[in-house]
Length: 265
Length: 265
Image: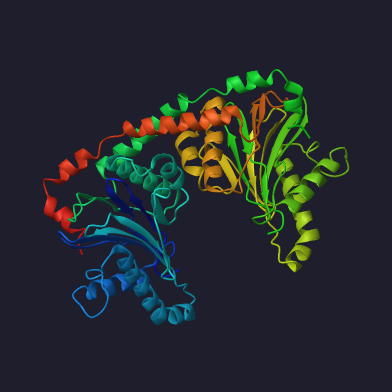
């Protein structure tokens, strides 16, 4: 379990641009909980901008990000800054994970540590529209589309229902960012190894500039506290507005025995 | 994977009584999806009433329920109808699971099938207040309390956040029942092996009678459709009422470089 991150990250491909969020906690057993950044940003203003969030074994993902960064200035190999399009840039990320795999896997497994890594990678290069990829530990990847407007990695289940109910390509970026935070909050409540600080980023499509909005929420952030309290209140209100079950039981009063008997052994 | 149920069940211990819900789908690989009841009710009106919901290998849980039912009339061994209190009744359920384990585990494992079983068991016997237990495959169990008002079994993660936000001991039973359905709906959306019919039951505390309310929702049930549509609408509304992120970015405008730089490699 050494350096294993039970991260939660989400990336969204919206008509307006990209939203990415990540937590920053790393868990290596109950007594070692540390904080490491899992969101990385690469850009050449006016030409390209890219964001990477990672989950899995921290030594693996940090090694991959280290390689990606080291090579940015090189021109003789494919890098994030010379890739002709975002598909090729995603291949650079995938190939880098494969390189770490070839170098480290045997050694990790010799110590009983699994090679685990996954990433969400989004951005825009030149005139092409923004794109978003989910990259697996094997270096392969899939792309978001109008039908699949978001990807999650890490501890994904707790925070998924709210994304399914809210996120569409035409969701405004401000709503999407709040949804990412609520999804993150639901995950943090249920999994102690996912925790602040939370990084949240909005890249405005076609700006080819640094993120239009970026914020790092520390533990006890005032806005996060307000958001959680407000969400709890609003959810309760939303419940009170749901159709009453009384009509169902009234409906069943027409045939109480049949319905009722089904429950009785 | 033979007869493996990726069930979702939830049980709640409220001041007003007990709420239990279960789905009815059994999955044994992609091409075999069947429907089996996972909610069972036992009672002796005026004296005791109990409800059991199960998850795991269907042959295991059905065998256990079969034993429990077969023996109801016996007086020479502990049964659900002669147990002096609900703790002892939970022991009857746990011991029955152990019996199935002793009989079947070796044979199951010989065919590469894991022995899996879990249950939620609630009810009331005599003057004691209603109680709720979560019973594990090993036959051991834990009890709900004011701090832990609900238990889930099966595919639990998708439906947990909404329970955490709504369910307290003093939650009215009607709200709790709707919450169980929303939690079930979130799970069904994300896991195709959890599916209708949905059984939903409310036992009114101290009634010692059959469930005050019971309903089985079939696929395409009108109320479930209304509930889902209404919940989607209300959630969107709840989002629009959340505190705006603008204040956060306004706040950060005081120190844009420091915050912004943290995101740039």
